[in-house]
Length: 269
Image 1 (tube, rainbow, N blue to C red):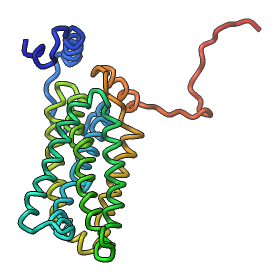
Image 2: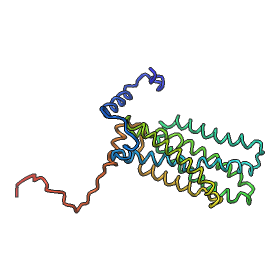
Image 3: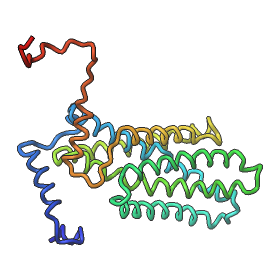
Image 4: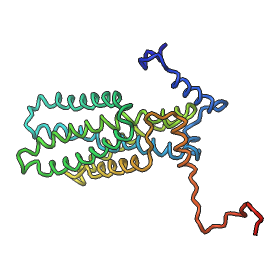
C-alpha cells in the first residue's frame, strides 16, 4: 500500500518482480564493507563512477560561487543591506532546481542531466572569469558576473545535485549500497573541506582566473560521463549490472596470439 501511494499507481508487478529478482541474486550474501567494494573486480567501474561523480560534486566549484556572490552583487549596485537576501536567493535557486531535477529525472534520463549540467557549468565558468577580469573596465560586466553566478548554480542544481545521489542505488545491489553511500558521503565531506581550504590560495594565485581548476573538473567529469557511464533510465538493476559486467571483465586479445588447438570439424581432405 505504501509503495502504491508513493508511485501513484496500483500496478506494481514489474517493479516487484525486479525487486524479487535482485533479492534472489544476492541471497545468502552479507553486506559488504567499503574496503570490500574497492577489492571487488566486479564493482570496479561502478565504484569508479561514484568516486568521480561524488568528488566532482564538490570540486566543480559550485560552493565557491557563494564566495564571490557578495562581491559581485555589491559591484552590480545592489544595496549592501540587501546583499544577504540576494545570496539567500541564489541558494533558493539551487534548492528549486534540485527538486525540479528529481521531478524530471525519469523523463530526461541521468546522462543528459549530468552532461548538460557539467557542460553548462564549464561554459559559465569561462564567461564568469572573463566577466571578473573586465569587472572594473566595462560598466555592464558586474551584471554579467551576477548572471553567471545564478546560471552556474542553476546548472549545478538541475544536473549533478539531483542525479548524483540517485546513482549508488542504481549501480549497486542491496548488499553493496550501504558501503557505496558511505564512500559517497566521505568523499563529499572530504572534498568540501579540500575546496574550502584551498580556494583562498587559488584565488590569491590565479586572481580572476581562479575558476580554471573547476573548469577542468567540469570538462573531465563530462567526458567521463560521456564515455564510461551508461544510461540507467528505464533499466532494471540486472540490466545495468550486465552492462557493467561487460566493462569490468572486458578481455583483450590480439589476432596474432596462438589460442590453443581448434576443434576439428571434419576429416575430409
